[in-house]
Image (cartoon, rainbow, N blue to C red; front, side, top):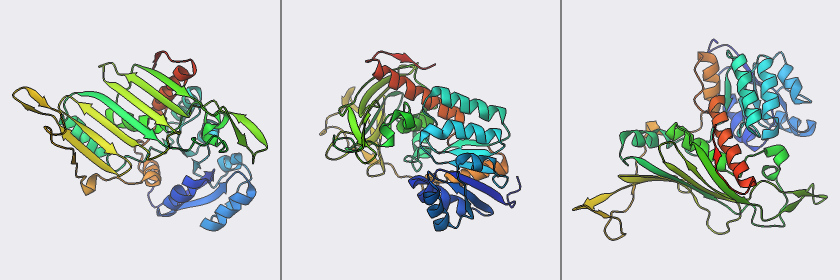
Length: 361
């Protein structure tokens, strides 16, 4: 597609990320126009249209997919609609950018990938996990350089207190109808690990818990059974025996924890998301004795991130560029989305069934 040719976007779902990221992102690109928006109600659709100068609203998402003046569709809804809307849009000849998580389960993700393959001339992209954008290139370079030696273990920790209050109302992320098998932030962090390592575990074991079995919904008018874990721990084993250890919790009061550690035979890396700092620590030996105590071993040192290595948020620009220049999707393709959904589902099922190893097939 000619880079100067006008390009038209239709919006399905205008929640927080769509309003703060996607709509402004598209409107900053030359010759890109958002022609219609459809949110959960006509009133909310009109508010978004008025705020951003979008020429019209659509009464339902199928109107967006079938519109003649829409070349591509952004799907900004919760995961429950990602598969149905993506498949319909692709089969209608529209490019697709869908919000993460890819889908509710593997079956939906597989159907989305099949739709993208039978419409191979169209771009199919998932909004990528953004927290590591400014660090991805540096981390991948350090791993490939061998600076920490053979990778032995990846430890991921992300905690918060969003579910600590048992009196708090339920949200869509706790509703399996809307969210499927997605658990807290686990899939987001696994996507980052997949991006860095470019390999997948052979099997996974998980244990999770729901501490508040019911929560009030619809302004306290009804109770909803909670099935998605509020806290989960898991271990995954790669074919080369590298271990991935993760703990994700929504019940941890106090200071939240948010980091990924990469432990190797020669040193380690630690990405501190809370402070947005990448740390490195080397192992040093003294006559065959490894210094590992706080008094004998040097402290972590901050890794300087070259300005050119900081990627920042480019989701909308990447999507339009792939369409206009015929470039393959890197962040994130439907193929990679299916990979992280397979991991997510294996973790969920292992936890649901009371533990036990689940293979990733």
